[in-house]
Image (cartoon, rainbow, N blue to C red; front, top):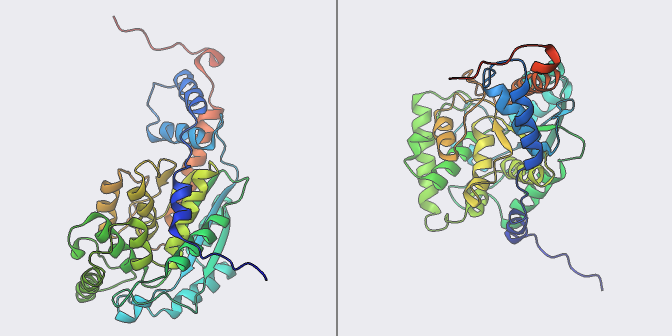
Length: 344
């Protein structure tokens, strides 16, 4: 008789979280040492210097490279969309995935411009999660399998993974996750999403309030928060972030929903997102509060709230610029440039 497959459980995820590698100190030290020798005042390139050191640290090599960036977009549908929390119907998720495949979305143009490899992952679009105002969005097994799917999207050979999502209703899910993880009031975490007016935003907050009341007493575990209030695409993003850490691949997070998925891992281990940068500050007001909670500062502030990894893709050339300056500039000795005079 064939042995029955054991159901996937959160213990598998917790076991992986206990194996997270730390920073590669030697590569970090080499990056910092070279930075001091380059023909410029120390610190004068600001965050570009931080980025080059961060890339070396989490790629585990010096010099760092940014020749093969990948952009991954995970798409899923949310049962809570039936509560009227979005300006668009759920059918738009599938339509937009087709648009990605045909090359017609914003992220396609950005990836083409910056020579980034774009992959789109559909998460059972005809089978949305359950409406989390009446029960858990996902079973434990479905949540773990979605995380595993995201982990499998992480392949060898890429210098950075830029992550994003597509899913009608997912800013409601993101706001609910943040409210459950970090407290406060629902109204503090909600925004326009795909284009709600003031009345729509108030309704969105009331839906989240009802959901948190329904799940009261069952949200102490971050993974339970993810399965009860999240979505398949958000679970996949969390899995991809975890796999990138294990594979020493730096991560660029997109906007609000993507960062909310990452916050689940942060609540499990406050060091779990050291290999991640947040690409941009979303136009969603809850994103700023979320970044304060997880101790991150976005690279860009363009008032974007599109999702689909558009902000993450837009940050790729900043990483390329950091690598180019760090590896291409001459040192003081190579250029014959006098160093800064010693202070008396």
